[in-house]
Length: 239
Image 1 (cartoon, rainbow, N blue to C red):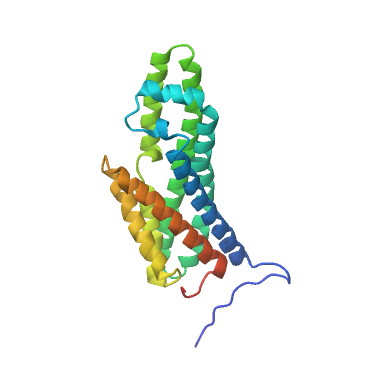
Image 2 (image 1 turned 90 degrees about the vertical axis):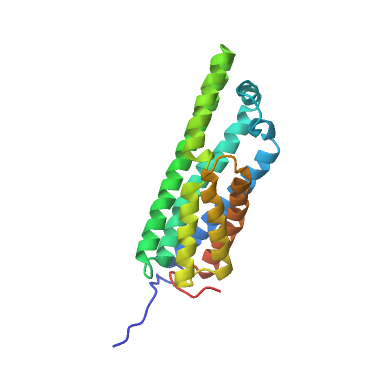
């Protein structure tokens, strides 16, 4: 006995639920890529003095007080918006793989949710911390510097200082893409290399690996987004 796969369709002029998930996931992936581009550009320009590893806590506080708006916008973009984009993207990718490799698909989705949670936590702590440090700096600059150090340590631990969780998620998605042939092979290779760059950020002092992860993620997210928008279905061979 043979079976055939049929895709659910709605009334004329509507898009099937699976297709909608793929479309939304594709847009979310492109949005995620945009947040990485925005984050790197701002990192290298507007907040370069703030992110300088040689800057003292007092210098960082002075910069923060004078650039609160820029820092708030930066943190919202790279943490809050990115975290929000991860959720529909993770659901779309899970849907693409779950019928062929359920363990990988479900495990990857869990890591995506963990990553999104960490991004929201990092963004909220950072934004509340900016206001707290700025207010305290007007009264006691030394205590403001101590508070900045504490907040910086917390946010780096949550998600600003390493890319382990993100690396694991991208690795799992890329392996699932290879096993199911539902993502382009070149994209899976890019994903694996990017994931490895993220995993080695656990080693202190490897700033180059973090930048490699960021640049690789841009290419990977764009590729994922275009792939989801082109096919938008649950199944289909990779091009």
